[in-house]
Image (cartoon, rainbow, N blue to C red; front, side):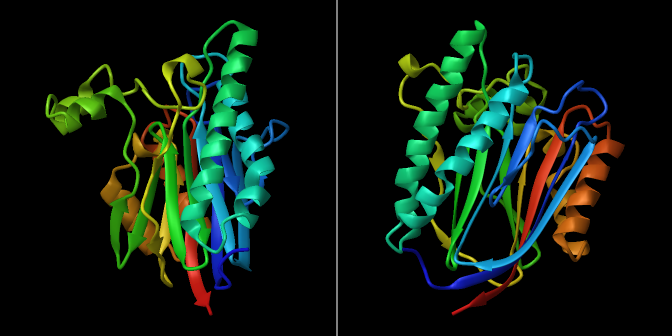
Length: 276
């Protein structure tokens, strides 16, 4: 069972191949919907407008420079679909209990993608960033450099931290943020789905759960967006556009206008109301 409080929300997932890549190696999970390889359009948009006690959203980005990145990110979302009901129905009314099943999903999916890489004879991997909403509380999970932002009372907060070598050096005080942005290690991930099991148990960063309120907006996105659009501009778009659909479309378009050097994927989630 889970919290009896219902959330009314609207959410939009959008993805675009960009102007440089030959394939879209991103994917998304919109509370049960993910990007199918049969969808050949350059831009994909899905919307939901629902009331429920439980929602699950995620984005994934196949590792650049590795083979079958699209297959790795698709596998992450397909396996999340399989795990969805288990995560939803086994939290004992406590959102923090969901972490057990999320961690099980991460372990199993990591091993699955790694075994696929062994089969193909080359490394495969994907980032993973997920937002879980249960009743009037939310929690985030991430591996890699896909991000989740929370826009509340007009201000933007990044809820995830990037698992890149450059960001690790920033946290150790070895590099400044400015130096990290120009570092050759800014795209080198030390956490992602597909890491060899011999390197240890892969664990996502898990945020503390927190309350959500009417009007809150969440953004899940791959680095094809964040490398092209600054945080302050992301905040302005979300605060200006009054629907997730308009905000998602605007963010994709701005990333394209600024170069579109990578696949671009985002999910915009808006809390419309909370019902007791």
